[in-house]
Image (tube, rainbow, N blue to C red; front, side, top):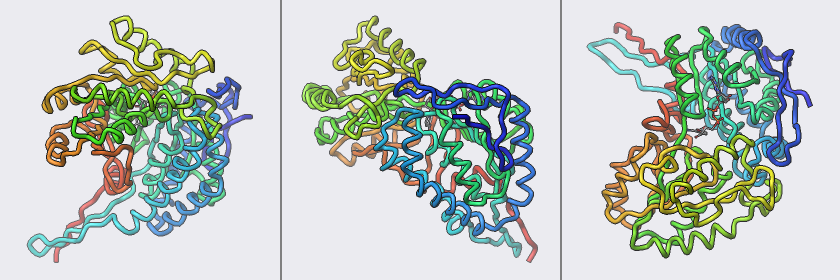
Length: 472
Ligand code: NAD
């Protein structure tokens, strides 16, 4: 199969292509056009031209387009789910039941939110009226990773388009397929040409050229910290606002007063998507008095996880996305073992399955300050550490350069409030995990990112907010 760019409402090919390979069996899924500066500039120019008319549409008209796109996604959920699974190896059942319905919701939510919620009452200053408006900003570059390709893309596309902007999406080179299908869906929804554009290619080439383009008015990026830095530099050079949703090394803290069953269940959930989840609570911090009981429950449950083909409905843990990712994960685990870490579960690739399957892994007795406690592994690798005092749990939880999320399991509400207040994290879950509401702010502190998206935060980012003062 050939996959080409989507620019100005038509398919555009590049003279050079790259192979898109399935993590399930190593087969070549597609030969994908690899955008050089010419195609990137073509896409930005198409988006800039389309902006002139798109910005003049009403909120209601744009909401109608977004609902039509949502309808198109909804009709093709099974196809999109199957394609995404073949492309990034995440579980088919999660794509069908959770991820693709969330894509639909992203489009519907931002369409309705703009129409119903984005407003501020006028106010008076000595007989003058202040009126706040949210003007479209212009062309937005959206750059996304491979771990939840269409979900993360739609999380940016929907508010950007709803706000009246036009976009150029650069999906990750390891999972470009659903972005291309989304282009077809936007065409079926009669979205005007050039409002939504997709360019494919490598990050350091296509992505870097895109973010350097001086015609951009916004850059929204989800991905790793090093790429976030490169994008922040490009954005700084052109003084373009950039939203950065970056990596994490989140803690999951279990206090002795916790519901132990719940704590075990939440801890085992951290292996979802083979641990390739930015928000995963990969550092298990467990109060010393209950660690033996916790580990007994955890190991029983984690040992029962079934690893295998992500298309099989009985599979719990699929493959990693790419050979390079498997090597990266294994290198971290090998180095931790060499430093004396004890393997309580897994500890290497699943040789029974071959390919890119890495066994769910739990490491104990990890050296304080070791990289396995501070660097993002992005695979099914958890560590367990113990603490005696609440303040030690907080210090350990905050002991990385990241601040994306934290999960607390405790039966004591006062403790939950005390600890939450001290945690450095964009999202704190108390006795739950991964519950998301699109009205809520989402983003990271410290090196986990800059800015928040969701609800009004998205519109504040994707718009030029204007205050008009009129003499009474
Ligand atoms: P990555 O940073 O390698 O790549 C992400 C995207 O950026 C890809 O499309 C890539 O092609 C592009 N890119 C790479 N270099 C670029 C450059 N110089 N200029 C412009 N674009 C460039 O990340 P990844 O490996 O695809 O994804 C995994 C990372 O994403 C992890 O760190 C994970 O924590 C993070 N992530 C964060 C969130 C969040 O919401 N905070 C969500 C999912 C994933």
